[in-house]
Image (tube, rainbow, N blue to C red; front, side):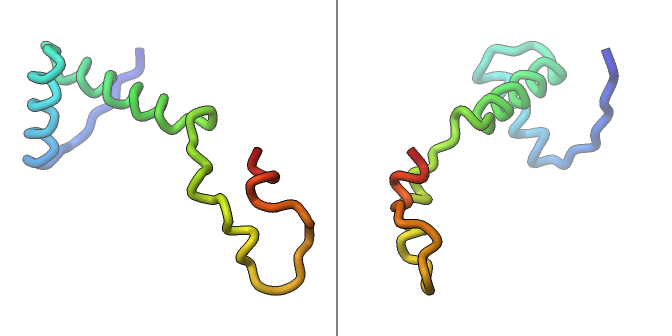
Length: 75
């Protein structure tokens, strides 16, 4: 397994220790792996919430390129 070395500040170190304690993890390495794995899962394309984009296309000024509403395009 490849090794990654990082330098962290005191704030990161405190957050890491808090996560270790909250999750009952024994090593910093495992805690970082868990955090990265969870962040990657949350940011995968299948979990995006496109709801914030609804209505944006309908408010674009100028001539419309499509008659579809943003709701139909994002469905």
